[in-house]
Length: 516
Image (cartoon, rainbow, N blue to C red; front, side, top):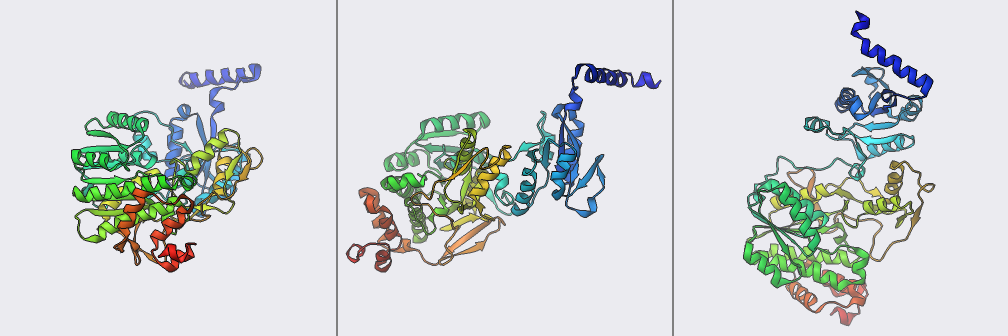
């Protein structure tokens, strides 16, 4: 009866042993990838169950867990042992011939996550990160429960998402205009807004191909949303006015801008025209056509700016605050400041990826350079929340956590691709480019103070000193957007506009006559 009951297993076992002995052929079951799970909590146990249930489909088998909880040492969870702590990972990988390490720990601090990654990177095993296993198990199709380490995993904090305390009804069922819609942030914002049931979604950009591709993608995903393409340059006031006249937007998200620092150092009047002129056009038309809420996308480079790009965005902030504080308009203005957005155009992650794919070298500006990072999804989420939280003239930013050293990020990306920094892929230092800082600030602590909001991941800034209240400020804006600025002294001229004081102007290198 035993032979009859287990005949398939007995015959199969005899056949594969025959193939191993005589033909040197390993069967598929012996060639399963051996996985070590970091984290013996619920997520790790769920992963072990899923991998065991679909072992053949995923081609993986779990050898055990590691966890730093002393109470779990020596336990068996889901028929697999807890083999040690995270410090034991290198030994376990060698002893059990582990080919892949799955990190199944959530809500972990950036410092602890990076420590675990450093330990795992010292082994030959591939590194995977566990996403939302519950969501993946609910999918109707088979999905790989593990994914590669993404740039978002290296931010150094938990990802900030929607919070139930924030009432998002202010942006729901509205006519929504998104400028710079074909860009990295604008396109993600365009993909998040259909969830708010816009009556019309106006996508404005001067990038024809990007705008066309985005509109097609959104129309396929959201056939019930009325999507309007507007091939318009925000610096062209008459063209922008036509959009306002035809569609009467109620919510405006202004993400259109030139942002590449070295290029704008060479072409400062392009920054003045697109960034300052475009913001001026959008903001004044929003007031004229009684837009309910207007959100300007700014940058941390606007804090104590050292580049034309940063100075132009700071002036954009001041234009928006000038209108918000004037008391003449019903539009509620808000500003959001970003750190570096992972995966956006011009960010270091795509650049490093391309350089690694080419075989190196990776170019890093300076070994001490640091940056704050956020994901594109976080950026778009912050813009939507800012529109709902602003009372007029507010500046918002995320609690960005720790800064990330660019050199360490480059080294980690190389190691996560299974290569060695400075051996397989070289790292070279190019030196600071014009206008760049070693360390960015999220706000100026001398004139700005941080205040909490009802969203625990978002803070609001209060400013005690703002030159935008100066009555001559808007006259100066009108002049530079129509006449341009002196390209040889572009940064000095913009900084003088930011601080219209003779003493400060002289400190910036302008003579007393010029200052007057």
